[in-house]
Length: 309
Image (cartoon, rainbow, N blue to C red):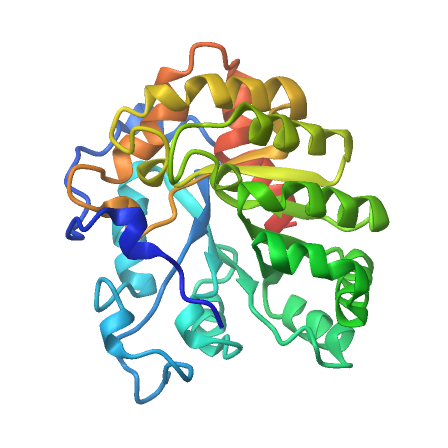
């Protein structure tokens, strides 16, 4: 397992609770079933019941606790009715805590699992998890891994099974992996694909036009989606995140709002100086090029169709 560079993303800031004011009740009512946050991590401090995977310790848990109850307390006041849970790396292939949370909140939580894709029974595993509310599988997509997919029999099984089960392959991608991702999508055009966090373009430095062009090129494949997410980690990395507006507009123009979805990447969005409300406000209030239908799709419709249907 590869640990996430969360400390790098957070820039050393301490995590705190969401402190910005909740939207008005009128704004909360704009979506019939509430907004959908398409990317959140949860974990429990109870490492006796839910032990960490080999190579991880409690020192990797920042904050020490972010349970489903803490998640819902953070997002519900902002009109978020449904959330997609992304399996946390320090649990490895043990998705039990995420599944426990989904079972406790049916219809409100869905999941993206991490599984051992080298197992021969990957198709059966995907099917079993789908019956328990999992609608996606997380894959780490740095350049070396993505370039190795073409020759990996296990990857061929996984991508084929994901297409058959209609389960999304959700890619935590680096920008330089995008050409290899395109090659894999060309091989498996039926497989639903989600690119997390704008492919992390602009995370470690200025936005490179070649990276943006590679991300926009994936719009040619109808089953590819992009998460408009993790604003705290990209560009200027501070609210109100207006510097991300041009990229979001280009993605809307290329993909259409129906293949874009908003997400916070909580609890990391709750870092000091960031906050839950600031992430939501960028899409809900500040992007004047979005129509009402665009906002509805990005703030809920796309994710609801992909992860809750």
